[in-house]
Length: 295
Image (cartoon, rainbow, N blue to C red; front, side, top):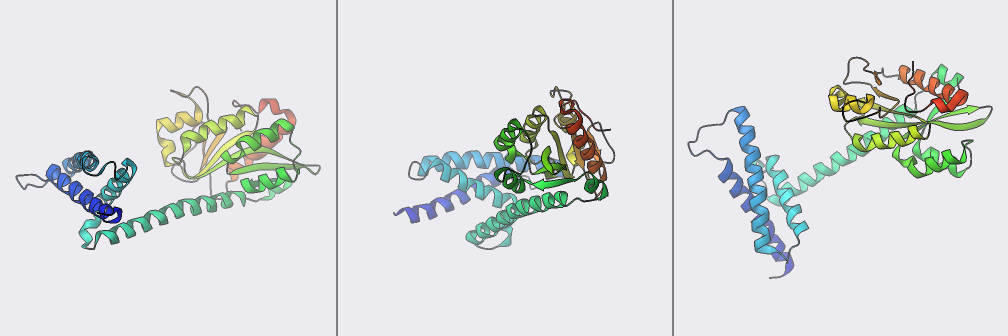
């Protein structure tokens, strides 16, 4: 049997094995329906059993002709289709797969596009106070152009830092003083604070160690109500120090909490703190360390 036919056989085998083992684990012999809480647990147990058994059986039947990765990826697809209940639509499995892949592609496209849109929203923040202080928020791509064009008056160490970890931030706060433009702040822009926040706190500390104002702005700050995230921002528990100078949420929280700030759609408080940070950067930058806090 050629590889194409073998792959088709394998896909059918995976579907059938997963469905059979899921049904075997999930279905109650007495025919009585589960309660809502027990049904969730039963489904999770059935999913675990089906994945484990399908992986072992597939390896025994098809490996090494079909690699472990191909086997695992196929089980992943079958599992996702089962959880999504697409089998109930009564259409061929190849249509299930196409629909599912399109949904995943659309979701990934939304994550990327919406993230960039929110970055542009923050960078477009403009008001009298910002203009008076000649402060603006620029995109990472704009920073790259300014560095290449030698338009910044930052120190050599600053520029080396921005070059090495500059892509870890989405936006930058810049100020023009007597026609000298310098970066004074590094900004992370997130539609949801959960997104890669574990990595972002490390990036933020790099910026604070470099004596830059380091902050994050999020559209949805609901996770900032959880102790782990509160400690990550403010310090505490397993976090010995604060992770940002400030974390600004447009929604998801009702009030300020330490370095976590509730902001409106015009980001007025964020702007106020940016101006304070810019003045500190110019007057005595040494104090713009991790302990610095806006009023």
